[in-house]
Length: 230
Image 1 (cartoon, rainbow, N blue to C red):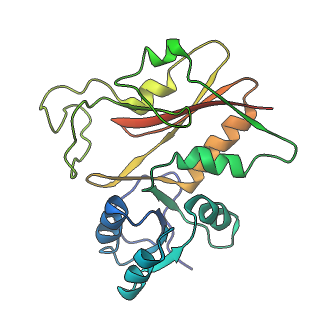
Image 2: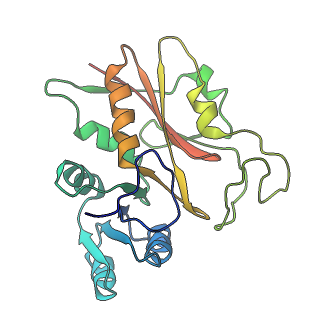
């Protein structure tokens, strides 16, 4: 039997088999492949819509599939060999779009704007094209190898302004439920989340009796989508 990593443990250190799905074979997806493939026990699958990128990775011995990332993730999570970890390296709110594919029969999802009183509490909010709001404690380009220290910003050397996934989890507004999927560091500058945590977030969303704000966030950066399931 494979020595699988316990679900409650955070990433790192070797000695177990981790099944990892990387969505996207662009700059950050390739970085994830390069770093995580050095750990021999990792079983990596890359999904990208560009067949040429996938062909290049296959030529390097990497399991790569040319397909839509959300559809592939949804299929893999239903299958007999689901990923333990998901690395979203595509410009989409993967957790939210995956949730849309798993709604109970007869349910519908209504997009809502992130409420203005909530936006006023967010650090450096930036509106996305589909109503989502991107947030960050950084108003600069972070180092690509940032180890995400708990107390001090790597770039400024100053005290951290906050822990974003905690900040978002503590937001209270009207009858909204705030559900936060935390992105964990798998290597400096490289984050992902456990499939178990993704399912746990879905359970909280479906249990909500009113509108929801679903966020994916690490300590510094995140994305929020507001909606209601009817």
